[in-house]
Image 1 (cartoon, helix red, strand yellow):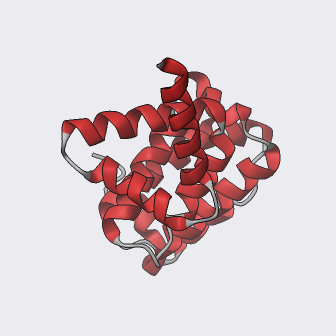
Image 2 (image 1 turned 135 degrees about the vertical axis):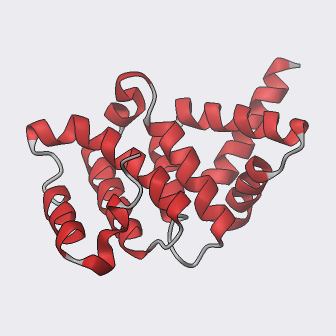
Length: 166
């Protein structure tokens, strides 16, 4: 029975991370849904994707942070991205290829420039802080300091620092 469940979960994971957007959107909806059954299954699939294909999962989550997607989808993707990348000692982050890390960092900053929701900005801010702690000492995120400078000097793009200090 376990092998059937594993095969079913593997097929579901491949569909979620595949080119068709509907399975991923359903996965996100299941995370948003408050029913315990759907929530438990979504967490199980998330953990499996985190272990088996963190690159595709991270890129898919970041891709859905953009403006064409509705608020709840962007919000859930920001939460899941933070959850994916904040694990102990950034274990998942360090498993990602340098190319994927670079794409994620650029896409997060782009989303920060476009996002209007303070909640989503707060989730992305936390992710940026977490990644910056490991990237800045080795200058592995050269776009970050210019981004911070623009946030500080341009009043229309200072969302990054809003409510960052309590």
